[in-house]
Image (cartoon, rainbow, N blue to C red):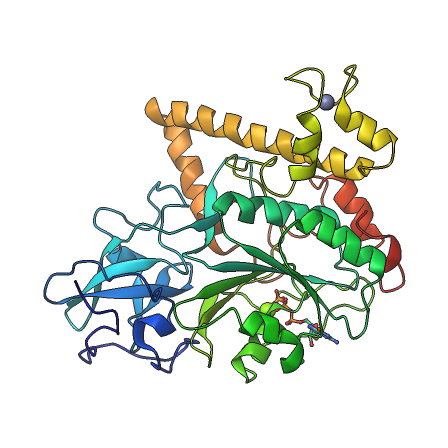
Length: 420
Ligand SMILES: Nc1nc2c(ncn2[C@@H]2O[C@H](COP(=O)(O)OP(=O)(O)OP(=O)(O)O)[C@@H](O)[C@H]2O)c(=O)[nH]1
Ligand SMILES: [Mg+2]
Ligand SMILES: [Zn+2]
């Protein structure tokens, strides 16, 4: 068994350390998140383990615990080329571990190791196309501003994706210095978050981010997820102890960010753990794999168990315990409405996948052309003007009505009613 202290030093060539958040070797492979208690895989002579730390449209940046390397998708895992119709969720992305070999001064990627877990969403667009957000995580941190960004329905959506990945979640309510969380907001968020911890903080204050820092020692990885302008990069910089990630002000009228971060990247923290900063998310479609009742809708599931009919849809059926809870005020009607909406979206994703799988089996030319189009959505969150702009923030016709309502109140003056 190999000793997990880092790979042998790289041998020059076109290796470099530029452009990466991970520049200090420090803890070797543990410093880029290899778990302390996990033995290294068997490797042949000349092979080494690398982790994807940045993902660009046509290239990956990987790190071997000592330094980073840029490597093209064209040199990707055997038989798999960029643009090929490969399930987007299977393609290597940030947080993945790969086996690599030195090759003509560069690196040849051999194989992606099996993932401990992976957070996946369905990419924007008509066709179902899975897109991995990050892999091999110990924690997913949802950053949500207490300003106009505050939206409980969107939080439920994040928790559905994270919960189905089996990754522990934490909710950071940012900008608490300017918009202190009311007791009602705390209670609302905790009701949605269930057992996951909720922190209301000023992301710029090292003392206040300490509870998160405490969770991120060597061998551990967290990903930050949230809207543009929520404070993900601000939080990253506080944890890093330096202004490494670019940040910019949000629009005063509605707290929208400017999509400042355009690349998902894995950053090495001084304490030994690592953090993945992400571009603000515009759209968060379910993949079809979510088990809504088990994760953040456990309250509805518990009520559903008491419905008279086993297949109760919690509409107008007699003896429906869920409707009774809404009528008595125990369960907010909006929460049930959103549960129905997410369940319908999940079922639609499953149906879409089945149709596409059938088309693929039939070798349909249109199916593969569509999948290739979907490949272009690997990095669709950065920069203004993308075709899916504003969906999560509630300015698209495709956006659920309740999200839109919440966001329309999402101005600096209108926060108290948001997200119920
Ligand atoms: N007062 C205060 N300002 C904050 C806090 N967190 C973030 N900000 C400010 O909010 C603005 C947006 O923060 P960013 O860190 O750039 O947001 P982001 O989530 O990285 O946004 P994208 O990169 O666009 O996805 C910046 O002006 C930050 O200074 C906070 O806790 N308190
Ligand atoms: Mg950012
Ligand atoms: Zn029912």
